[in-house]
Length: 116
Image 1: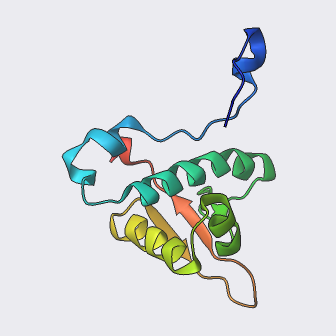
Image 2: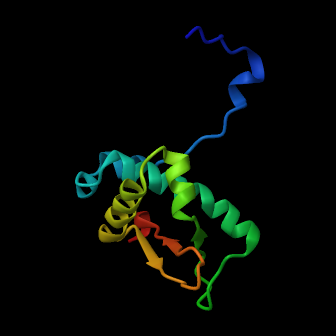
């Protein structure tokens, strides 16, 4: 492919997924796959939507709504891989999943490991 160069303000046109550097560099997180780390970044990105929509539980904890189908689409992975990534993050204590039932997507509490 022949991609074009960027000029001036064009470099600011992209939005980014922020993945905390500690998640990549700290030994405690070496067992987590890069796919799961990218998913953590996507979940962090959704925290902005959570704040805007006032998605908080009765204990005032902010949560994210991210249906598995959207995770699959956003990451370009299978349902199985999306679930594996979520399980990795949950097992590492980086997120907490809460099943809602009645056809509603689960919600995820994204944990702030920097203050643990």
